[in-house]
Image 1 (cartoon, rainbow, N blue to C red):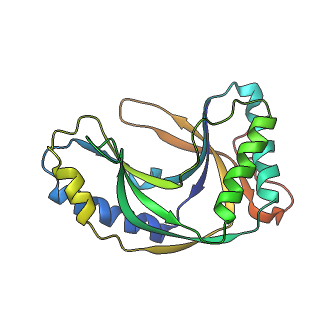
Image 2 (tube, helix red, strand yellow; image 1 turned 120 degrees about the vertical axis):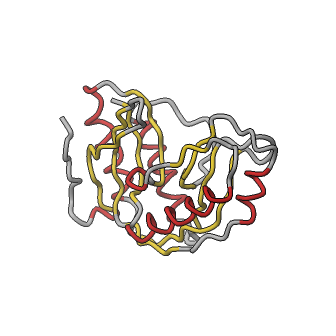
Length: 198
């Protein structure tokens, strides 16, 4: 199974992202952006890639251990940007603001528990963002980057009270995401909801 650990966005946040995507799409002429469908928009905490089914339970247990250590917190989805910082655009994103340090603690704890479960460590530092579009071939000559830089985003506050392990099923029409297990922050229900877990 192709797995990742994520925070699901609220309906309000998904609506704000969809409005942002529509604004950008109307102004973009030739960048060939593949916009992320609203139902797939999420905040990735840790991407794992292909995981044997026998190890899926270990992933869920690792995530449960990490979420037990962090209480619920609030984050703000705001600002629009792109990767890389120069040259042709490959990723369009909206940013995450979280000033208490809870997001960083959650990401660090998740990383340590995933590594303790036997998975290789992540090589890049964690930079929280929500991918809203991917660009296969930016032919805009810099126009897309200018459009992104001038686009205002309607910021949205969201409470984060759980984390999910998700499976990504790839197809020619794009990925479909299925929740494998759900894990409340702060351990407030004792155990995660292992929907779909073997």
